[in-house]
Length: 220
Image (cartoon, rainbow, N blue to C red; front, side):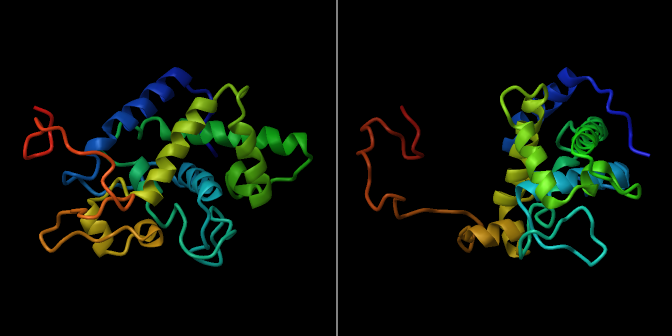
């Protein structure tokens, strides 16, 4: 059975805000491997389905239910969204079951309002079709939704998992073919593992450096 959706919304928001604040150092130090096992299969499936709705990908197998298979290639799940959310460097683990339960409660209400029969062998959000998931998630982001800030911050983390591999050291993630970094064409580092950008992104320098700028690029 899924956990109860009775959660402290302020605690969730504080936890998500703390997670965002921790992002600058996330992936820069060695940390124990994240494990979804302790989170439980239902919350993991629900969170995967939410992430797949935002950044869809192909199913991992014919029995995959969390990933709807709405797009070819890898999506947020394959990019390691659960590893990011459960990273020991973030304070989210205690909050994730409640967030998943809240999402499942919203999915149940959505299904009841539309007379959708949900399967009993999977979480309610996972039981929705991809089109229904998309419709519900769009509703969650509307300005009058009570929990909008929760979904916005969670979506931000989903995007970071795919776009930046925020839970990984970037050089290692690239070397191992992280699907999001590969898809976006993120450039590899120089031979010493550092990134240097000799060409300005606009094709020209936008301004001359201040004469007091130090050799490191910092203002005097």
